[in-house]
Length: 277
Image (cartoon, rainbow, N blue to C red; front, side, top):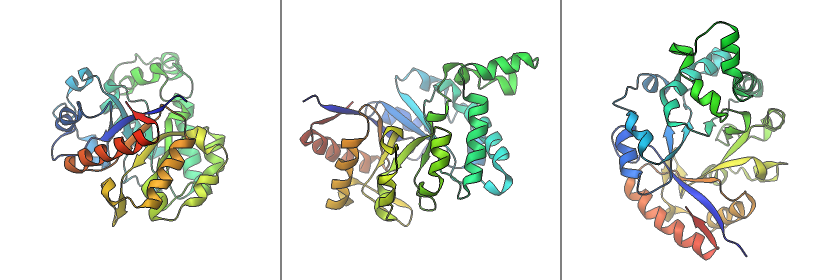
């Protein structure tokens, strides 16, 4: 039987410092880095010192974790506008997945997803529409063109994550209607009793990213040393069902915990005939 494989990723904050500092530390540990754009205002103020252009030459893949502090009371249009400005900061790294903590109100998710697919849903359409409207493809609006041309900003690469306030079951109709992807968080299933998520139709084909860590307590993530047997069994259950080749993020925010958790994970997966690349 062929071995299944997954790509290992780390968050871009495992040591105090900039995203650039963290990527330099992680480049020999992983194939992919999740850009943790957790705080919208701070991230909008990032400069080349925070995300240096040299990162594009590190032979790393990237995905984006969108902010945790979106204010959905301002409307999905405002949140989407903020998102496009943030993506301009990282477009040169060509991220290929975009993780969203979904709003509680499914109508907000539906509107945000509509805005995303209307602008990004067809390869190159954003550039074509700008040309029709007389824009040159440079300046504020043009900054995101490289990502639009690449085709990675389609709906299935916008990934909704199961979070404390939203286990995805209440907005699943929107997820399916808009053909969104899923970022499955193992720790949230365990911490918030989200077992019903596992029974949703078409779930497994939608999972593009998996967050793995030992325990969430008081919103803090702990290493795999804290994962109990139930959690270990759940991890194997999930890995047996998702498609091979997707990205597995060891979502701990300490380099020491990341290294020790990686060692444990490699041993577990080897015994399950699964490989990390």
